[in-house]
Image 1 (cartoon, one colour):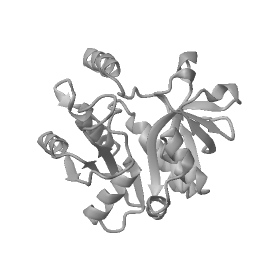
Image 2 (cartoon, one colour; image 1 turned 45 degrees about the vertical axis):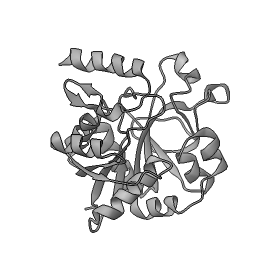
Image 3 (tube, one colour; image 1 turned 90 degrees about the vertical axis):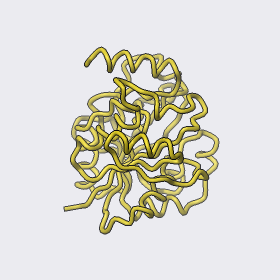
Image 4 (cartoon, helix red, strand yellow; image 1 turned 45 degrees about the horizontal axis):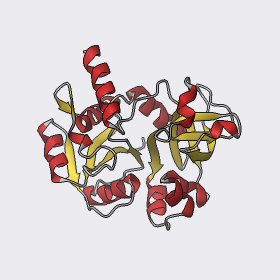
Length: 246
């Protein structure tokens, strides 16, 4: 059976909401909620790869594992690769990268993504959800993915493009991208050794480096679309939802 490691890149210096990993919901830091979602999958060990000591201490205080990484990384994928090297865990076949600001990510969606990647021997897999509100198309904080075919419950289709812009004006098969990736370890190593692509830099989307270098990304349909925390308003809204549910 393949060996899986779940890594969560995290840093305090988010431009739109500095310090967000340690903002609390139900008395627990956001980053620790994400750790718990990863642990609930039971796919493998969950480790936070953090730029800041404060994050490491907070994760450990709440029962998780974290390691300190450099402050020079351009994106989360580069950060988790350093984490993978530092951990020196033998025989890892796949690395799953979770967004540290999506505490409502569905563990079943994570497990389903891994299942698709493993069964299809894919290089990189990710998730997307159906878009139910037209305003999402024009929201630059929400990344959209355009796929070659319509997403269904049990298929795993190729991504054609990712954008913060409104892709719905160009064609059908446009979905809300969820920032989770499942990498073959060999592909993760290949990715971090590639130069930053012009598309990646211009659009501030790390996955475009893969597409620009002919690395295929397959997309599975998520059951739900988690709220990412990009602004103070996002945090307040999600805090209300999660605390009300409890």
